Length: 217
Image 1 (cartoon, one colour):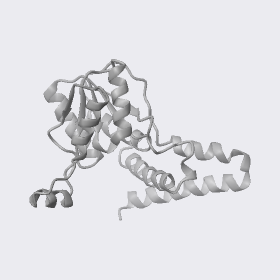
Image 2 (image 1 turned 90 degrees about the horizontal axis):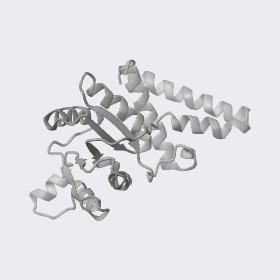
Image 3 (image 1 turned 45 degrees about the vertical axis):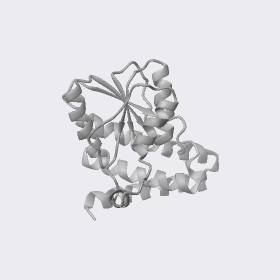
């Protein structure tokens, strides 16, 4: 385990300890402290017309709903689905000739059902947030896109913005990050469910590590 990763984990633990102490010592500020911790992860930027809306596969149904609403609001007329590499089990099913639903294809079908007619799948899949930055950089350069809106789950949105701003630095492409309205993660109530609590801790660790690695992003 690297020093930076250990440092990020210690920082997250320290933040949670401070929050816990605040909760114990001053119950009246409990909710505001916890909401602040949740909001650290979230970016939701104002939208304006763009060349294309990018829907990463992991943004899922919630991202697709928002993307369709933005198309109907004439923010863009093209939605591009960014796939992930197939998993070993999926490749094995393909080798055996077994039909298995592809999540990227399912997102395309969902977008069509939501009234979005102009949909494409980006040819190069991306494994992880850093890879997404590089894939979108080369894709935007090839297509000469100068403005993109990227759909994200709220818990992942701040880190996505940091990564994409780094990858697009020095280019003419402007990136806007939109947090999906119907995401399961609620930054104002994350501590009330086990899944959201796990998401908060993991994403906070990743965000802190990104800040340690790239403090000027």
